[in-house]
Structure formats: structure tokens, C-alpha cells
Image (cartoon, rainbow, N blue to C red; front, side, top):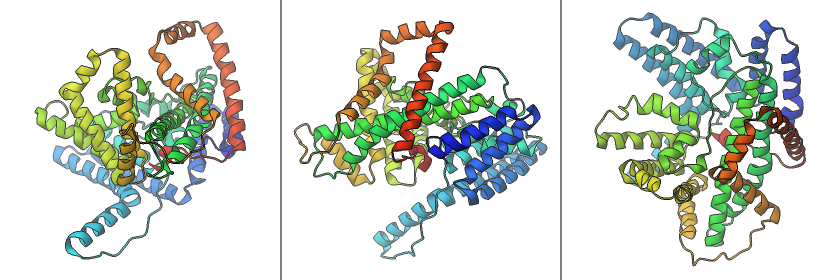
Length: 471
């Protein structure tokens, strides 16, 4: 069950919100947990048992960490808890990839073919779930948070359905107090539902049409694609993945707000970034901050020699690439970002910031878009062929790819959405936003229109799943 599906929009969501509004205050938390379990079990019934068992193990580990006094023993217990969670992630997400890679190397180097292992079904949202569970254990170890006294609170943290399938990744200490006392402010429901409507429109009205362009071009084959189609497909995918994922984050944050939870923002106009460091401060913020707090800083952060610092950056972004998927294309994409982040530290960031702002934004966007080709392509060879077409202005397309005027119109709207905030017209819009009496009425009216349009389209076209569900 996903947010943009008719089943969720016309079935689960209205029924759940009606029951939540009618439930007494003490029962709302229990209802939210039961609804979250049903929400996840609808698509992953067997994995619910795995997550509950793993969460129960987390509670035992966290309690042991809090009661032990020896630092070495506490660290060892934490290591057991973290490795157990990573073991779940490795089995479901990376075991087949690791065996296939090992078998390929064995056959190539030693001429020995290892037995094949069948593909393992990847539970939806497993990477997000595991990363959040690790934050709980590490927070207890660091003293940032205390072990929960109630199993219900921890299960609600793990299964809270707005952020369950694709984040934002929530750190336990950020939401610990809210689990016990969610906000009950009168405007939460209206604010949250408005945010949900805007997120749904991003997905259905912008991301899905862009996917039609990118899918058609990336599926055309390297002998068909020329310079113009290669760039068109890459930019379409850059818009698709932004509106798809930021739209989901908006929907998750909005739904959580309806229930009284304040989730942190996950995007901040990422295509207005100048340099890759700035891009990662704006893109998938919850993952960036997780990697910073739970990998980069433990590796030494900025408190090490320059050579070790650059190595740490590469380790973090290779891990980020592998987190996105069990494929060498994702590892290469992570290395690509690690390379440009290193250049940012050395000179590129300063150089871009010293240029005209528009030039810095444009160069960063184009370089990020080249990276999205590696991310989107099914194989390394396909990525190289597509990038080759993008870097060869004299190469012409040899076959027509059906793209309608509607697609171009949506692309222009998407580009305007991404880049208009860089201009003064956006400042005037922000000034109008500061006048709550007129602004709130306009925003609510606009949200209602977008909700109706998005819901109507969601019921009349084939459903397209969110990109980040595969991660």
C-alpha cells in the first residue's frame, strides 16, 4: 500500500483519519501503531514478524548498554546490536549481489564456477528501517537518548507509517518525546493535509510524466540516442527523482503532522546548490545527516589529516551509493559524488562560489545530472554509452522517441519549480506568504485543487511506484 495508490487515497487514509479523529486521546497512539502495522503488513506480511523480532532484540541490547558500566563491554554489546541489524539488511539486500560478484571473480580468476543463489525478495523500506533502528542503539550508547520504558513506543517509532517505507530517516532522539506526547495543536490536521496534497501533486502531476520521458529514452538503446535525446532523458530523470522523492517526503511529513508528529525536512531546494557539498546539505537531508553523525564523525570527521579526511568522504559516499542499491552502478555513483566532494574541499567549491550565482547553480546542476545517468542506467556499459552521447554534440538521434507537448510543458513547469526560487519573484512570493490571513486561504484552496487533480489522475492512469521504494 503506497500513498499515491487509490487503495490508500480512498480506502486506508480516510478510514484511518476518521477513526483517529473519533478515538479518545489515550487510544490514539495505540490506533496509530495498529494502523501502521496494517499498512506495512498489506505489502510485506512476513517481514512484519522479522521487524518485530529484530525490534525486540534492540530493546534487550539497549537495556544492556544502559546498565553496563565498562566502556569496552558497552561498546561490544553495541557492536552486536549494530551487526545484527546490518545482518538483516545484508541478507535481504546484498546477499545475492555478494554471491554473484564472488562467483564472477572466482570464475574469472580461478576458473571455478560457484553455485548460484536465487534472488531474495527485498522488503520495501528495509534500508530505512534498519538505519533508524541503529540510531536507537547508538543514541542509547552515546547517552543522547534513554532506553524506552514502553515496548509500544519503540514499535511505534519503527513502524510509524508516514515515514515507514521511504523515510525521512528519523533519529530516535529527535522523536522520543513526541512518541509519548504527540502535538495536539488545532492547526496540525489542516497544515498536514495541505502538505500531503502538495506532495501528492509533485508525484502524480510532475514526477510521473517525467518518468515517461526518461523511461522511453533510457530504453531506446545506445544506437538510437543522440546528443539532444541523451540530455533530455537525463534532465527528465533529474526532475523525476526530485519530484518523486521530495513529493513522498512532503506526503510523509504532512501525514505525520496530521497525527501530531513533527518530522524534519528532507529537501531544501537542492537544484539551487552551488557545489556538491551544498547539494548534499539540501538533498535527502535525513540520509546525509545520518551518514555524518553515524559514519563520518566516528571515522574522525574533520579532526584528521587532509588525506584521511578525503578517504573518509570516499568511504561515506561509497557506502551511500551501496545503500541505494546492490549494484555496481550505485557504487560508481557514490564514488562519483565522493570525487566531486573531494574537489569541493580542494578548490571547486570556492571557485564555484566566486562565480556569478546563476553560473554556479547551472554548473552544479549539470554535473549532478551527469551523475544521475549513472544512477538511472541499468548497467555500467549503458551508463557509459549514455554519457558518451551527452558529451558528443555532433551525435544525432537515429530514431524518433514519442514525447508530446504535454511532456514538454510539464518539464518547463518542473524546471520553473526548481529554479524560480533563485530569482526575486520568489522573494515577493515569500513576502506575500508572511500575510497569514490571505495566504492561508489561497494555499488551502490551491491544495484542494491539487488534491482533486492528483487523486483523479491517480485513478485513471497506471500506477507508478515511488523510486525510493526499491531502496
